[in-house]
Each structure stands twice: as structure tokens, then as C-alpha cells.
Image (cartoon, rainbow, N blue to C red):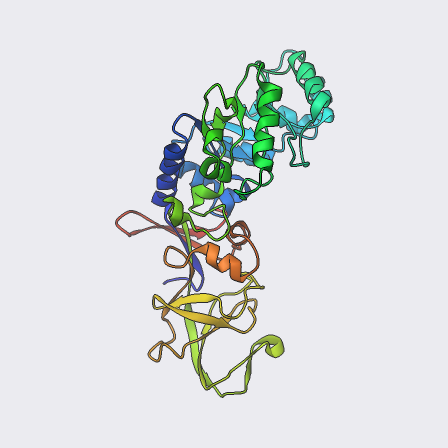
Amino acid sequence: MTPAAYVHLDLDAARHNLAQVKRYAPNNRIMAVIKANGYGHGMDRVAAALAEADGFAVARVDEGVRLREAGFTQAITVLQGFVCLDELRLMVRHKLAAVIHTPQQIGILRQLAPESEKLPVWLKMDTGMNRLGFKGGDFLAAYQALADCVAVAQPINLITHFANADDLLDDKTRRQIDVFNHAVKDFPGQRSIANSAGIIGWPNVSSNSAQVRGGDWVRPGLMLYGCSPFAGKTGADFGLRPVMSLHSRLIAVKYVAAGESVGYSGTWTCRQPTRLGVVSIGYGDGYHRHTQSGAPVLVNGRRVSLIGRVSMDMITVDLNSQPDAQPGDPVTLWGEALPVEEIARHADTIPYTLLCGITQRVQVIERSPAETFVSATTMAG
């Protein structure tokens, strides 16, 4: 039986997208970002699909531990690092690398027993994001403190993060690159600067040439899942394929007279007699509540329009263009023929929010290249 709401995960598309990263950044190692449950796709299954990546990046210590306990042996970097000695010990035990971004973390490192294994670290420079990391003289002081710390594996790796790389007309990215490269030009250790937008839109960052040494490792996230990091573009514009498609089905078809309103608060009124379809999906499944009337939905592979507010379990669509549509007919909310980037614009949000927002009750269907069922699980799988 097909579930009422489900996602189809095309993990071959994830492998294709990883190959595209290699095409964009042929001289770099790849740290695949699989935090936030693999951007909503399931961290373990994404890690398995991206096994050819040189390493993984996660946000939190527990995510890295989970990958190790699942048997993944690749290098794993925890982007938020640790906040206490217990987390640090977990990182050492599970051979995780930590991003160091506060003086407090350096103090915790000094508490580690001298006989412990040494921790690989990435020292984070704040080049303008103004979130995590050290600036100016504080960065140099932190570097020296880590160099003197017996708990730290040498050499120290160096990392920063772009604030505006998705805006190709904003010179801030170039300024961040210059600040970083000038500060670390004489230091040993590996470098990492480029996220998805940096990889695609700022190609010099993805080079490990002497001019731009910041590109030893690239850190693709969104592009691995087939989405564009740039407004007004889709993943297909950059040779990417969507990994996730979201599906449901019609559960009712009815007629509504001209002048009658549809849904909560009556935000949409029929201008003409309307053949209305009810779809079994809503914000309880992760279809964004603020998606506006007029957003496209595919019924039987053809576009119709969302009408009225998104409810917890249902949405309504205008079926005037589909007089033969019936309950049970297939519905696609986003996927290869309906880019998630387009739906995000109708919801006044970004693709990250939609992908990460799929809830536990939505079932996951993975398929082999021959389109036979492999498994049906929940989004946590």
C-alpha cells in the first residue's frame, strides 16, 4: 500500500551530485556536509550514499558519534566543536575532529589527560560572518595556544565560513577570501573555505593553488541534495539532480460554487465554479504552512494551483484543468519536475527549510536504479 504522504529518495542522484562537486572542484578534497539529519534526508543513508567523499561534516558531537557507531570510518568534523570536557572526551574516543572557535574550548582542551589521543582541530577565523570564530590578534593568540597544547594534533587546520557567497554581486566574499588567505599564508595545515555557493560561484576558492590556498577542502552541503544555493536558480541549472521528492494523493474531489471561500479563515474565494481536490498532506508532514495560494502542485504529473491555507493534514487544489482527476490519483509536492526551490519561493522561505522540515510521520521510499522498492522507513532512518 502506498503511504498517504511519502518521500522518494533517489540516492543515485546524491552520488551524481557528489561527482558534480568533483567536477567543480577537481583539485580538492570533499567534506560532505550531512548535518541536520542529512538535510532532512536521513544522515546514515546519505553518508552511505556519499561514501566516496573524503570526509563528513556534522554540526554536533552526537551526530558524529552516531556515524561512528554506524560504522563510518571517514574523517568526521564537528562544526560546532565541543562545549564541555565530556563532549571533548567523546570526540577523542570516536576520533572526531573539532572546530575551535572560542577561548573556552582551548581551556577545556588543557584539561584533557596528557596520555589521551591527540585531537585533530580546525581553528576557525571569523572573516566577516560574525557568528563563530576568532578575529585579528585573537586568532593569532588562539593559534599559538593550540600549537602549545599537548592535546592537539599538529599541524592545526584552518577554516572560515562565507556570509554572502550566494550573492555573486556582493564583494564581501572576495574580501573574506583575502582576509583569510593573508592571515594564514605562512601557516602549515589544511584549509577549508568553500561551501556550495563558494564551490559553484567563486571557482578560485576551490583551487589549492598557491594563490588561493584556502581551498584544500571544500564543504558542499545543499548542492549534494540537488538544490541551487542561488536565488532564482535551480539545481538543474548547475547539473544537479534532486535527491528528495515529496508525494501524496488526492483523497476527495468536490465542486465549490463561485463566491464561496475555501479553507481556514476564507483566504481564497472561488471566482468561478471550481472543481476542488483535497490532498492528504499538510504542515503536519512538513509542507510549509505559509505556502501561498497559486503555488504549483502536480496532480497526475500536470500542474495545478494550491488554493486556500495549508492545514495540518490537508491542502486543497484547483482541479478545473483536470476534469478527470479522482481520489487516489498521485500528487507531487516537489521533485524533479517541480523544483523545491520554486516551492520555497511560494512559501517565502529557502529550500533548506523545506528539506529539513519533513516530519517523522512521512514515510521514506528508496528505490534502486530499476525502480524497485528497496525500503520504506521514516525520515529518521
